[in-house]
Length: 265
Image: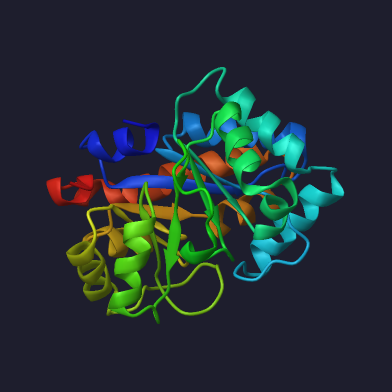
């Protein structure tokens, strides 16, 4: 059992997946941010490889990409950050990236390097299951379900993926929302009817209230990204302290609905 499966199977869910652009606002400060996310209670990390041409990310996370790139963070730095995390934590780590660095390095070598660094999962935003050429590695391949994804497609994605299903809460790009759509529970139920994988909800989770709405709708995990990037941007003097406050606040939001259903079983 890998670290992702162990986290969902531990029965401590729903989980909080803390998402941050690796190297934001600088590699040194990113180390402190990541440490703070773990110490504050994050159950899983999603580290984003900085990119120059983002698609699904909203303006807050786009600025995080820009800060990390300006600070000199590239793929080698990202792998080094993961290796450093492994010296003090066994938290599951999912790497999120666009296809470019995977294609340039070669998919097989990329997965091997990620596994060697200590990563557990890989989400390539713009690489559908049909384009994955090396699915059988120790790295879980994680795929996104959009609000427009038909059931037949969800079945195919679920059969090709591992770790969990990343369910987008609402159309559009990443960013905080006041509330999640009313059909979220129905879409989570559909995903669970055709897959045994846990369902993690992202896009729009930026407060205790929206985190509560997601897990009350049946999510096994919530993915928090823009709120963390915003905390880094807004509190440049002490971003580690600011992101810790975000994690603790949202953990408080999902605590009241920790149920067996939310363990991913």
